[in-house]
Amino acid sequence: MTSSQKRAIQNYRSRLGERGLARFEVLGLDEDKALLRSLARHLAEDGAEAARIRDVVTKTISKEPSKKGGVIAALRSFPLEDAELDLERLRTEPREIDL
Image (cartoon, rainbow, N blue to C red; front, side):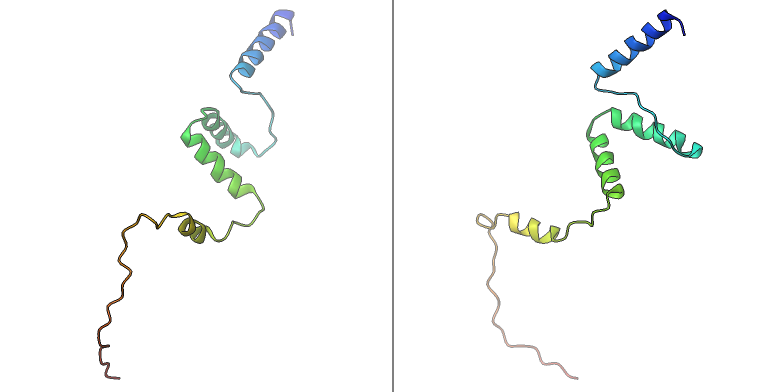
């Protein structure tokens, strides 16, 4: 490799670094090459879609069990103070049921 080629590669990699990108090598199946490149391209965009993909992949790969109590936590965080809820129960006679 000539010195001009080395310098061009060094300049290219420094421009990538300025954009927050890094070049790295991954070992995997040949059939996954296109998938991994596409995934890396989407993650490099760094938008809302990239954050969603990153979250899904992280949750899928992590060995941690999913957190429980998400519904309870959401209900506890909901402020009921200002909510105009009618919590009075109607006190009527029960229906007769023929078994």
